[in-house]
Amino acid sequence: MNRYEVLQPSFASRFACKGPACVHDCCQGWDVTLSREEYKKYKKNGVLDKCGKNATFEVIPKDQAGINSYVKIKMDEDKKCPFQQEGGLCDIQCKFGEKMLSYTCRVFPRFYRFYEGMVEQGMSLGCERVLELLWEEEKITLETRVGDFADDEIYMQYWTQNTRRKHPILWQYYDIQTLCLLLLQAEGDTLEHRMVLLGMALQNISKLNEEGKHNEIPAYIESFLQAAPDISVTEILSGLKENPMSVLYSMQMMIANATSQKDKEYHEAVDKVIKGLKWKFEKIEDDNFSYEFNHDCYVEYCKQFAKWIVGKEYFLENVMVAFLLSQNIPFYDLKYSIWDNYIYFVWAYSVAKMLLTVCLEPDSTQEDANYYLSIFFRTLGHSPTLFANIVADFKKNGDSLANLCVLLKSC
Image (cartoon, rainbow, N blue to C red; front, side, top):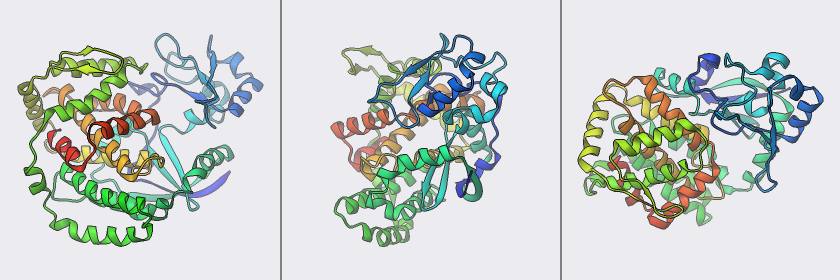
């Protein structure tokens, strides 16, 4: 075992798996992968003979495989893991112990990243228990603990980090991360306004990075934070007209993505959004859709949600801060720019808020909100392909700060 100092969000220390009590557990609706070594260990120890009636594995094509994804478990007809017992417990864990679980199953909903001898831990919003903790947290802070990590965990993390270390933008990693957290959690303004401020800062940081002026970034961040209280985002947004179609454009990507998802609940949530907004939903070609939108209907949904969220606005802030930490925004994919990462972040917020706006009723509970968000973030938080598709689509149709401001104002 290897001992490291771990930087984690304040709610992480209270996390404990709900096990069979979880309504939408992590053993259904998505792929569970194993490394080559894990698969060999399963065969050597008789896991395949003693657990998971009729369980089979599929070898992942080489162009899609990774250090942690040599094979995947073939889900049953209900898209559930064949190793899951009727009571909800894992057959492998019950018979062989937690150490025999794959890395994927052992660490979820945690994400780990290694920087400068320290480990950063994020928590996936695809887990309903994580979302429950966000209702309890008034404001997310970062705290440290000491954690032990197995050799395979260290190897997997360093394997993914090697290429990232080549990016000069990571020299200012903690300065930029601190900027994001300070702006998202600033008091006295709406979350949308704070996200616009963040966009202004990240747009300039992205430009400095592209020009090779990495050493100027810390000074720019300091000056921006000093000036931020005097920047009137209200004046910026007041000159923009709300455009529900910009939100629908974002939602279009969510709907298009549903065609490739195996999660039954995800499809049901998307269907409810479509019917609730009274869209005429028609697939014309492969990825082209047409919509007929009832603006008055959407306005009523917005008013209804505004009443529902009163006194609980902190929850949306916590969701986006937790998402930023779990996905390592704006460093999620360094093949793309800081600005591209911000585009994805705004898209995630607009769709998550619209999903709640449309799906929740006046008498809906926090559990209802958790249900829809957990379904959504399972797709959103675990798909590099989706990230690439979203960024490419915005670049094609308009990725300026003004366009994103309209989107934030409209949602």
